[in-house]
Image 1 (cartoon, rainbow, N blue to C red):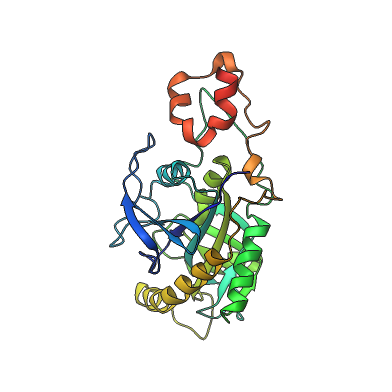
Image 2 (tube, helix red, strand yellow):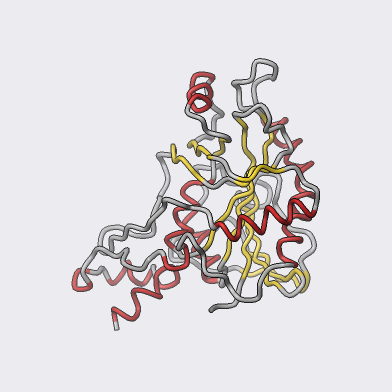
Length: 294
């Protein structure tokens, strides 16, 4: 078993994580390019916590401009074993009011401009994604939300669109008709890359609006999203602190197989591996590539 390190990716409105003790900033280089920001590393209780603002402080990066591969890579290099993603979202269900936290367990990827994998020509891999969220990690978040008396819904499907524009009415009605619960712009390919890096992943989707389908609410706009996200930021900090205080010292094996996702995933024969790609994969896939390469 490895020591548990809790990673937090903050989304819109969550650019810092108050309450970290022994705080330091660390710039970690990645062969995949520049991450969104420096890592803020500290502890809550006895749990090591690593925080990264997804859009950078000041919200410098749009969803399409975020270097998701570099972000996941530097978190892996910092030792993160369990990753909680915080994301603003719109809701397709009338009961999911602004301010509710949805602990989603499924994703639909509708993005089209992003690098979605660490692997490719010279080292092909296919990881399982049937159950993208770690159930134990999700349950810990749910228990913490209950203890903090925060409104939440356990389970749901998050459809991730490319953006940066919000949905058209036709798109919104289509996604609602398909039974999706929430819509956002950042969970993909983040969840896919976390699985490839063998990091257990879970998402807190903060409802900020009803997208544009609801006949009694106006169209979604930035002002509405920011207002609710800012109101939620303190609640998120309390929720994360509660999760961290009760977090196990040793990383729990994930029932969804996230920490062994690369077992039997590499398709390319070792004789055909690209050495330059293998160097870039040292953190993400060193567990399975280094022994075989030796």
